Image (cartoon, rainbow, N blue to C red):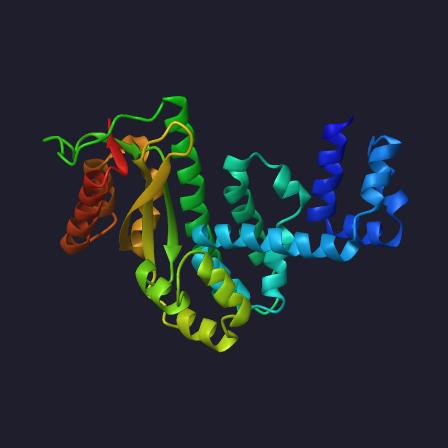
Length: 306
């Protein structure tokens, strides 16, 4: 028996809309590309198309309910766009389901971010930039969590850091710590969750199915821009031999701090960056704020002093 071919055919029928439509029109022709035995083709031909459609819908809903845990802000915002909920459903296709399970949440987020670059219903380039910033933030968390879990399972997770700053931290070269990402948000992350997510977890997906976010509500949330840099570091909060749990330490800094991130390359020190800023005419208050920001990043383990 060709179990691999049967599995491939069933996966395509459940998660490939075009294949399912072809199966509805002509089951024999739709199954022709698969190396199935005659008895197996006969078994597939007995599948009721209405039951197949229901099964596909239920499975997609359960998967999206889980993905919504990682992308609550993005799901809510996308629900306000024309055809937004169906767009999310279309992302759950055969190609995604063939992605290794530990990588699916990140793969989904990449599709979501890329789709927002061209999605209709966005009022202006500014609004699109804000939407992309939110999607990037949630994708960053999904990606760093994936990497941290993989390192935990491989036994290569770095030793836990401490919040004690070296006495000479200002002179040491800095680099980003593992599993750290950054994104520009239009408002504090918690404010966005309060405004966009009336509930959490899988219930949010079900709620959005009944009551999508309105375009007016989206505009109101994004109009109240107070840009800031969200820094995120994934940590393993519950080790396990099979499915370690990752959570995130976060820190919000002024949006202008994002211009300094390209210089955190393992070579420049805070002292050198401050000297460059001072030479460019930066005032003492700004320099003090930059120093405080670097101190907080080090204390939160988001930077490593060389």
